Image 1 (cartoon, rainbow, N blue to C red):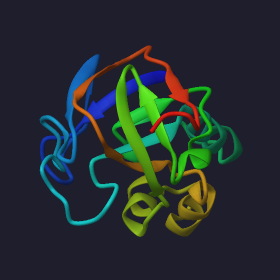
Image 2: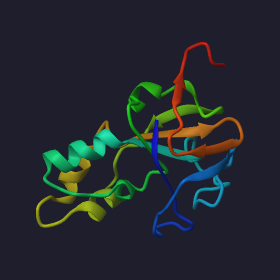
Image 3: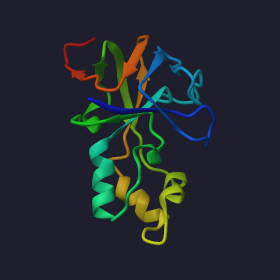
Image 4: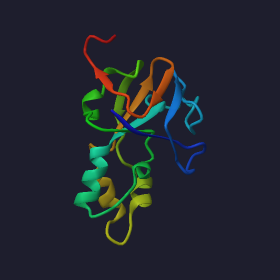
Length: 154
């Protein structure tokens, strides 16, 4: 299920939490910094599990907010790693999981503080930094929408 949605109008800019946003196949999230950018597969939209953020906060004694990872969609109850290479639906919008959204030095630097180093932030989010996906159909996403993951979807 979608727990929260975020967009950032410019690279490095503040993320804005929204209740819904439109997505366009092959182009991305309307109003987001990556809209109409196709530099690499999976640049359309990013997802991260709320549970991964909660584990980070608990295990590393941190209190980062959902927007701190700079992902577009915060999910709950969905194994995003299992969606790499798979087609899935969210509220009728079709996506294809492209690759894990592994943490980078920029994320490490952004979340580092006196209690945790940049490299330890990166290590903490390895294999749980989220999912990059391609948007395969137009539509609207909103908080509360469920994921449909089925091998019959084509």
